[in-house]
Image (tube, rainbow, N blue to C red; front, side, top):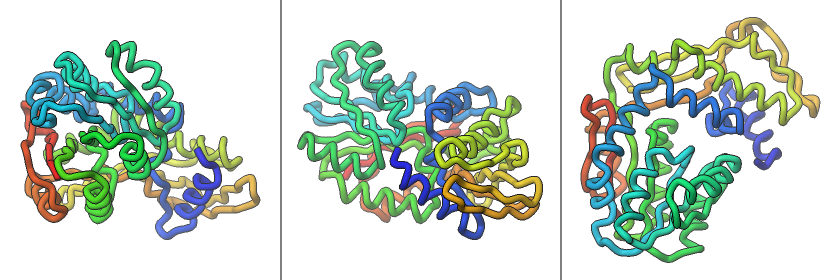
Amino acid sequence: MNTTIFQHDVFNGLKSKPKSLPSKYFYDAKGDVLFQKIMACEDYYLTRADNEIFSEQTNALANTLNTEQSEFDVLELGAGDATKSTYLLKEWQNSGVDFTYYPIDISSSMIEYLEFEMPKRIPNLKVKGLSGEYLEQVSEAYRISKRRKIILFLGSSIGNFELHEAHNFLRNLYNEIQPGDAVLIGFDLKKNPHQILKAYNDSEGITRDFNLNLLDRINSELNADFNTSEFEHFPIYNPLTGACRSFLISQKEQDITFGNGTVIHFKAFEAIDMELSQKFSLEDIDTIALRIGFQKQHYYFDSNNFYCNAIWKK
């Protein structure tokens, strides 16, 4: 991680009104471990719904993505531990098709793990990990190889963008890829508000720790003096907009001092906007594809219709 960029983004967020921090920085080594615990948590329905689609509809997903049955590259944005994509990679590997897997993640530690782990998980799998910003690494993958691309953007990661940012990101992705390339994007669907809120305020407190860990990371990397016991995790969900947001609330008026002498003042009960987890209707998903120019191929759902994996092509 470039400390200068990290420092710039942290200061930019904490000096803004309202205060905010980029959720992409949740994922240091400790954050990676905490997020794996969140995904295994009983209250976090997203993982079970998504895994059901991949485990029970693997062949259909693989065939819809690779209708040409020819060689290609798989680019996974925000690969994490690649649990879901492993279903597809095994399916393609067993079919004998020639492909290379490019996991892309902002976390260099996760990329190192995948480059070591994936060939053991799937013997003879060709893996080349790329660490950094998603679109920059997509461009790098096209520089490395001119083969047709299948882009995976799983786990409702698109929901971490504001709606206008999601449109801009997907439009930029559309402009980056080539005609005939396919994308698979996971969308968490609007549902019972209580169920959604519980997923981001789990009874074990793992999501709370995940948010507070970013303050610990800032302490470690920027020599700040956040006391995490003086900040409370507070999530909310708006069923009208579909926006589920996580905040950290300062429990008192306080100053946070950084190693370079910068001081950030907090009023009592002032919030830091930490994360957005947007929920979508099917109409929302159709509208995004239409506005950008993607061709809808197929939508895959879990048995409860909690979650949708959408396949589009350029």
